Image (cartoon, rainbow, N blue to C red):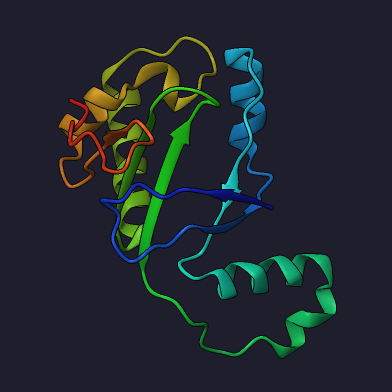
Length: 153
């Protein structure tokens, strides 16, 4: 587990623990970029995040999980290096955002000849994604008290 500061412009989240998540992207990006990439997951409350982690550590706990989980449909995704600014995007309805990005990926593949297996980050930039999916406000945060307010275009 690791604690990340959330950009102050993302309302409703406090600093709290994130759980290491073994998403496939981290392996491909580590290979393609030549730097170690790690992914973490944090739900909108520390209690929910710790509960999720506990279920992975002790699968028997899944039997006591309530049918309706606490939390909301808010989400935030942040990419950062050990030093320097972070890029982040937040919103509601994570599934809708995922669908919009997937649709954009299909559009990019349809419009550009891709001659070899590739990852979305190799054919799309934050600027072109922002232009194509304007409801995603990709922003930069330097780790100071406030976000830079600079939307990445």
